[in-house]
Amino acid sequence: MSKLPPYLEKPWNVYHATLKVPKDVQSFIGRKKFYKSLETDSVGEANIRKLPVIAEWKTQIKVARAAQKDGQNLSVDEQVAYYKGEIERNFKGYEADGLMLVHDILDEKYLRNHNQQDMTVIPARTDTTDAEKKAAYTILNRVSGDWTATHERVDEFIAQAQYTPQTADECRTNLRLFCDRFAVFEVISEEQVEAWILELLQGLQLRTVKKKIGFVRTYWNYCKKRRYTTANPSAVLTDSMYPKVQKTKATVTEVVKAKRKAFTVDDYHKLLSAKPDDHALCDLIRLAAYTGCRREEVCSMPLRNVLSDRFIVEDAKTESGWREIPIHSEIKQFVARLVSESTDGFLLSGLDGTKNKYGKRGNAVGRRFLRLRDQFYNHQYVLHSFRKTLASQMQAAGVHEAHAAQIIGHEIDTITYGLYATDIGFPAKVAAMEKCSYLVGPQS
Image 1 (cartoon, rainbow, N blue to C red):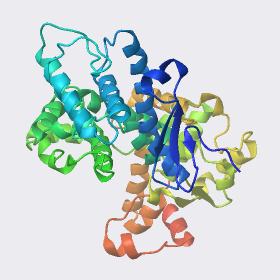
Image 2: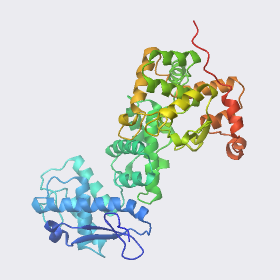
Image 3: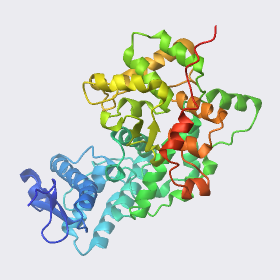
Image 4: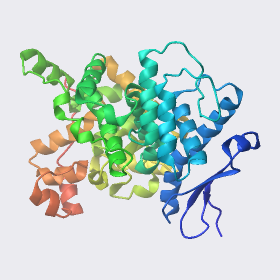
């Protein structure tokens, strides 16, 4: 029988979360072990559902230790965990009475001294600020279950989202910004989010802000679907939150200057001749130009995906990105040399030592490309620009859009070609690819 993941037990057909209570707080908490059904027979689902449960139990243990001392300096989260624990321990079956007692305690605006019997763990005060009144109201509503803290389900959400490590970190960072700004879902208004967006736009582009809000929207929808909150994201996160951009000469100019541009054939040769001794960089440029592949698609391509006549692109960003690309006749010898000289099983050999923390092999050579780019071009030109170059050459040669899309890895939006059309076949892809060329050198 395989070993269960940490904090899980399966006494019958349903998984349970469990956590041993440390001896120093067992008498305070009133039990030796926490135990709760996760209401699922799937170990994967149980592994996700356990996260907020274990986090709350650990907070209760932390609060119990603090309360045994003087009960001071407890955060809102810790007070919520404390009161929930006290109701669970001392008011089983009479939760409404326990909640009323919590209400009475908080209603007195933190004026009582610490007393374990009436559950007061907040130090005595002679005055109460508006912030403390707001905190007391938040605590009461969270203990009752009427309000849900925005941060409570972040780890659970990311665990089930199946993001790449890099996207997971990006998501967590953006959700942390959101949770720091908005403590509970149920009181967030569209006006408050709009004000936040305007602040973000002081230092960020609109597309970047929309991406941040996209993470928030997906997370909030997850919490709503799982019934962790009754707050409806569609009533708050609307398109009207974003400022309307007036089409003026200045805004049109800004949009034009922000768009990516395609490299020309002359640009291709200029880049290659600028750094002839950086073989990895030149190899990357050649492969990007003749395939339209993204940087990491090139840098992480294993030799098993390089056949005599084609590249097989797998694990791409989108479904349409999974594709086969004919090896252009102009680079067949070059590709054969890369394959024969590889020492690590990758088409671009020797990049493992430069991998970043997410395991991406093209990080360092990508930075070198940007430094090279900066010598001749502005930010509108990136390695990705070679995708535009290839697409532009195919368009100029009269290649059907559906054929070009299957080579470059773009989705086709139309119903007929996008939904119902099948693969065009490899010979058609070869014919389309061979209509492109980089043989013409820089003009004098």
